[in-house]
Image (cartoon, rainbow, N blue to C red; front, side, top):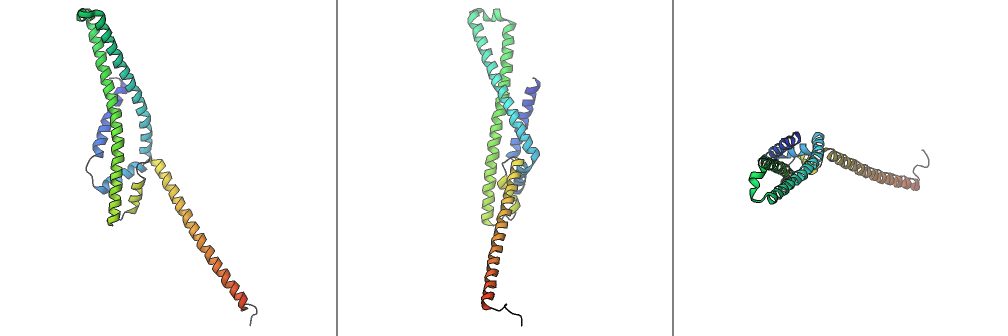
Amino acid sequence: MTLYYTLVFLLLVAEMALFMLLIMPLPFAMRRKVFTFISENPIVAKVQYWLKITFVFILILFVDSVNRVYRVQVELAAAAENTGASAPAIMGHERLEVQARKFYSQRNMYLCGFTLFLSLILNRTYIMILEVLRLEEKLKQYEGTDKNTKESEKLAMAGDPGEISRLKREVELRDKDIATLKKQAAGLHKEYDSLAEKYGRTLEDGTPKKDK
């Protein structure tokens, strides 16, 4: 097995281990912390980015392996047609070589195919678990049994890459600060208007005209 197919095999094993971790029956609080950590950690975001590039190369390897399997099948069919009934006697070790190439091509095709397929399953499983966690979070909030609002906000942000999630939270905090400043400005404006009205009434009454 060549180096890149060995790396694909190691990635397949890592995906299997990650899938087992995702489906493990963990408590709600621990599972929520795990998913918020995945969504917030910038290292995880970088790993996800490079994995996307890696899966593109694996897709290329998968297409190449399918093409090799097809060419070996065509070669075997052509050899069988040309030699007829005496194919085993004429082909000899060449036939064994072609069969070996067919085996390795099929192995590489299945290896890359299962790796890509399991990546799709992992992505879908991750999204489904996130949805379940959010539904459980809403249920606990309706029942009044969940008091950890910070963790709830983090869970609502989960599912995005860490850097994007962090930037979204910063934007939301800025929006909240702007809304607070607007409310304060509106309150100050109302206070100023009320003071101006009081001052105008005092001038109309003539109280501040002379000092006694």
